[in-house]
Image (tube, helix red, strand yellow):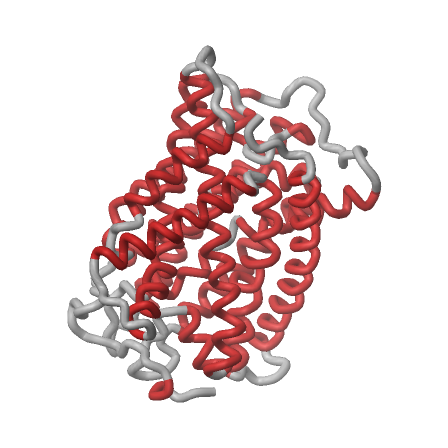
Amino acid sequence: MVSPSDVVLPKVVDGETEAAAPRRAKWWYVTFHNVTAMVGAGVLSLPYAMAHLGWGPGIVALLLAWVMTLYTLRLLIEMHECVPGVRFDRYRDLGVHALGPRLGLWVVVPQQLIVQVGCDVVYMVTGGNCLQKFAQVVCPSCEPLHQSYWICIFGSSQFLLSQLRDLNSITAISLAAAVMSLSYSTISWAACLAKGPVAGVSYAYSSAGTAADSAFRVCGALGQVAFAFAGHGVVLEIQATIPSTPTKPSRLPMWKGTVAAYMVTAACYFPVAFIGYWAFGQGVSDNVLVALERPPWLVAAANMMVVVHVLGSYQVYAMPIFESVETILTTKFRVPPGVLLRLVARSTYVALTLFAAVTFPFFGDLLGFFGGFGFTPTSFFLPCILWLKIKKPRRFSASWFANWGCIVVGVLLMLVSTIGGLRSIIQDASTFQFYS
């Protein structure tokens, strides 16, 4: 373990601002930043995950994931100021403190990058899909464009938004995105409820394919559930925007805002998952909004709300990467900071995620793979490992059992969902036609 002096970290301040990163956020800022980071593409695939898991296992998986990730978020919030006078404003800083300068970076940074880059790729695909559905509903007689072009249209907007300075600069966008997430989630389950079960709906496990195919589909579905709880990768960055003093540490408003965000998350996730599966059964699409057709104006509005939401969500996950890249370029490579650096570095990142989205536009499969490989460690068990290392709870105590239980469940979930998601991507990529 390293001491605070071994790593350059911002100290707790009692003023309102700092030169580089103003800390002026309120607890409700935390709520909509967390809602924007978490509620997004994942909620639309939950009925599809339920279709592969079934009623019983699907309900248990969703409830367990909600409880476990709220618990691990609490651990991260508590560890943000676990050393007096020091704030661990980044996940990697906390990892370095707990595991050492070498192991901490190698364990935390790759996982966090997978989460952030993976989210941004999926949000590119989601934005393109929903723009395509919006156009189909609004103008059914128009000449259709291939999905890849819609992804490029959505991605072009991110070149502009990426030039905003930091998380404080996108507060209004994040608020709009949070409102949109609650709105389109409500529209999704309400439209499914009004539609009622489709003719011949079936809730039986799919008999298509071999037993191995069914097992892999279940594994991928677990990854989609894991993807839905993806806010941990940026939670410390969000907490870093809150002022903190010895008498009022940042963990108090942060926890208040997080609990409020998780209530909103529950109001979005559970009705969409359960009512969407009830309405479509095994025939549900991996994006439930795509499966809805009536009423057209409401379906079009809901898809445009998703577009607005993922516009903000992309930036919430991209901003920490922008900051890290620009810091490395200015400190190690002596690149002068300024508008030109921001324009080139951020535009390059947006272009790379856009290229990945156009190359692998498989919404459900991407959720399963990234949910297992990237999101499960950062959301389900890595916070527990850091807590055990830093806090060292008494052996066989309640805290010890809770953290080790999360670690065991999280590792198993990571293994099975990664395998299932990767297999599905390979299968779909072998038959996908990019420009037909």
